[in-house]
Image 1: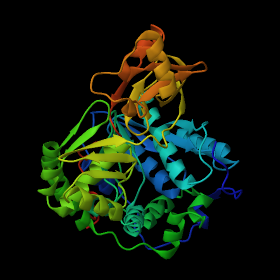
Image 2: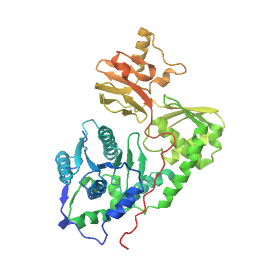
Image 3: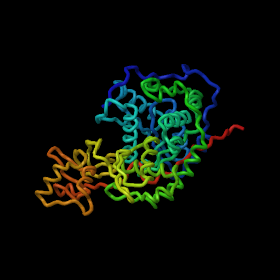
Image 4: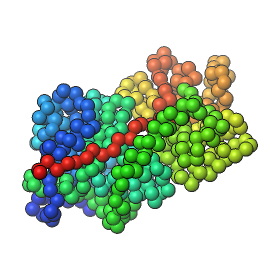
Amino acid sequence: MLQAVTNTATAWMPQSDVVSTDQPSLTAVQFDRLMQALGPYERAPVLGVGVSGGADSTALALLAHEWAVERGGRVHALIVDHGLRPESASEADHVAAICAGWGMTADVLTWHGHVPATGIEEAARVLRHQLLDEACREHGLMHLLLAHHGNDQAETADMRRTMGSGPLGLAGMSACVERPHYRLLRPLLSVSRAQLEATLRARGIGWTDDPMNHDLTFARARLRRDGALPYDPAVGQNRTAIEQELVESLPRIVTLDSLGRAQLDRAGLSRLGRPLACLAVSRIAQAVGGLDYPPRMSRLETLLSKLTAPGPVRATLGRCLWRGDTLVTILREHRNLPFQDVQGGRAELLWDGRFRLKLPAGPWSVGPVSMTQWRDLAAQSGQTAPAGVKNQELGALPAVYDLEGMVAVPHLGYASSARLMACTARFAPRQPLVPAKFVGAGAMEDDRR
């Protein structure tokens, strides 16, 4: 479980204790416009809503609940308990009780696994999305609403600018992201934090204030204190145009196989022009390397210079090895490959950001193929790798382990028992080669004219 980062209790802020502003509240008509821009929905929509108890997610949950009920649907509130602070469990239960009192179904999603002691902010984000993803699949939720708003969008773009992100990253968050089993929706990206607080204040409703939001240990909290540069919606429009070019260009110059290996046509890459070629290299690295985010622009530019210059290429970028001449082969490096303890018989597991596995019921671990164990198996049973697969490529593939050792390698057709023959693994990276279509924030018009 994550270590507590602070012992300061989350404060419940009653409506009477909140400083008033001149911001207007968000109306049902305005919220409907924002929701319709991200449609379609089923006739009686069932919406999953991530709720932390803060002003943003509380306002979203209430507005979404009213919107869904008016259409014969409902909201399923999903409250994540990361275990970041000793009191987080009781706080999550309190938020769930409030949501239930408003007529929503509510679940507290608790993380019980191990998380690194460093990089807590990023680890918490990854765990939150993992728990929400599992909950959506378990409950059959087709839409998951998150309360990211206009201030969050500006902060995200500013942070990415500081990190040297390219034009795709500077566009910030997409208002709609297609996941394998549901759609992730952010209807509030054009709404300010102050307006969401005003919405709750107008209803006489308080909210919780998580001390992590003010902990200057974290980069976002420091940026929130200093103020982010205004977000420019034109950057999102530019991203849409670039992505369309990528959609048309990438399949012509890159091939991916079921083992997660890529081959790149260097001549085709050179014909794209430098800005688009740089983005193509980034997408390859994200897919083959299982990355959440693109590599830094400076590193992309360095590799692109090597790829477009004469002579063989030997380089590393994005946890990948880049090797070749006319055709460059891109493979996942044998480093930082995770071991994950899982319970089989549930939804697919995403391993290393690249492979999705389905396992029979029972406790298992999923990690990289042990070459030592594979060589022993091959010597004992005559098991061989598929034609065209080099031994050096096996160590980045997923294998299933129990307490005795490696018991299945789906890609190699190996299973130690008939029950484990049901194990499957498919290359379906979190960030596919062709990016999902970026969706800008819906416009919010004033309905009180």
